[in-house]
Length: 452
Image (cartoon, rainbow, N blue to C red; front, side):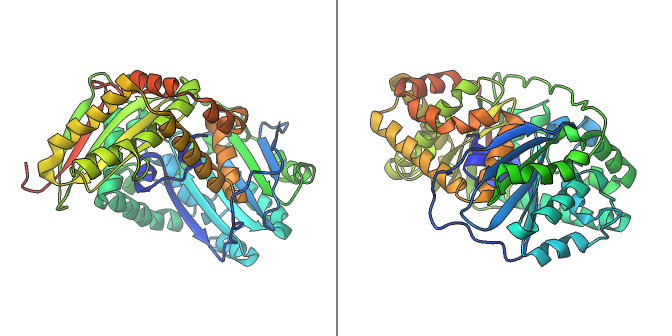
């Protein structure tokens, strides 16, 4: 499973991968315990190009309706950075037949919830409603997909919301560390740009410019509709055909994204911050869903072994044995064209050099000696538990399918656990040797003011 969808990320992963917002009204609770799905999803392409993924899921009497757009930060030209995210903010603001505020009131009236987020490879919108309201909720999603009105007053007021998001990233050291690591690891590539854009760009944004980007990219061939809930695919199909199946638009013109330049030689940045503690981040490019995807499961397990929880190698060595850090973790984000393995730590500034050396030494030992069978088994159990937790609700299951459909394939998603269980200790060691070298690493350090 693609990690950023499979195991919903910490603040750092959110800063690296997503920009989003949510609204809810008495959102229904999920089932009390994780369990494997009792059915499998169906996939078909409607005549107009919309991909429909549906699965019966009767853990609760709610339906997750999700629209995934094959457009995100990587599709923006240098003078468009931030448009994908701004569209995400505006789609629930109204259409010609739905005035501002009416969409939120409609969803609240259903007893449902809405959510949206933006990544580099896709943009996501979802509505979770009681099953009795699936038809009007689908009509709503289809309407905003092609008929968003961008009311001028709403467009201007939303700029303040986006500025606040920018400030939240800037003010949170973990989120901002993720942002800076991404910039350094993907220098001169769209993956290194800020999803939110810049203040100057957002301040000058006009309705015409946003609408032109919307009309270009929000077309049926770029849409994936995911429906998960107590309905059979046979029941979902005519509802989807009557709503999304009627949408029209030009053929998709999404150009191939540029290849990600190798992180040759890495980069080293020191940033002065107001916090009293220092932060350290190291990042390596790794397997992606369209590039070396056969390595994803091995890198996934490697990351669990290195920095997931108190028993992980980095925690044991740097925190328990050496006392160099207050906290440390490893994470792995997979995008379509490049994955990113990151190690981040919070510590005293005086320990920065020693901590960095210790992290690299732990990784060298994995490259040289490999991992134990006990570590491999523990990582598999942890990954299985995280997966089960993430798909226990209709919404979580839909998110795993939607991201798979927009960044790799649904078949890959369905085979993820089987492939994960087959990964050997030798393959984990090979992944460490292939991706986590000493030279090709980006490093960012946050230093308390006056500690340089």
